[in-house]
Length: 70
Image 1 (cartoon, rainbow, N blue to C red):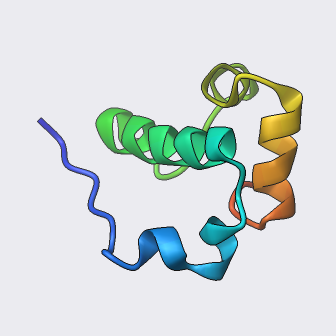
Image 2: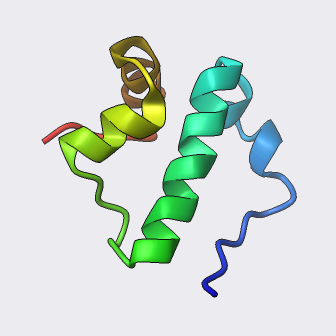
Image 3: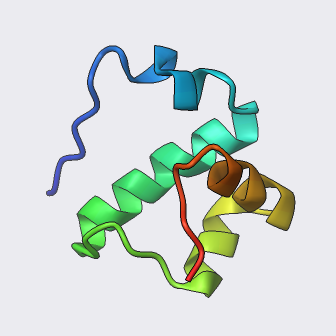
């Protein structure tokens, strides 16, 4: 079992606090995915869209500076 550790101030960080709920959930899910599969923080386009659920959510994470597109 792999662990993904989050700081207790994570939810109140300026990049995180303004996220819509679906984007917050997608970001935490992506952190867990990357930890489980040892991807060093990289997601394929298919996986990122699957985790985000929509292009709008993925764009919110890119706009917040949390995710980058290739």
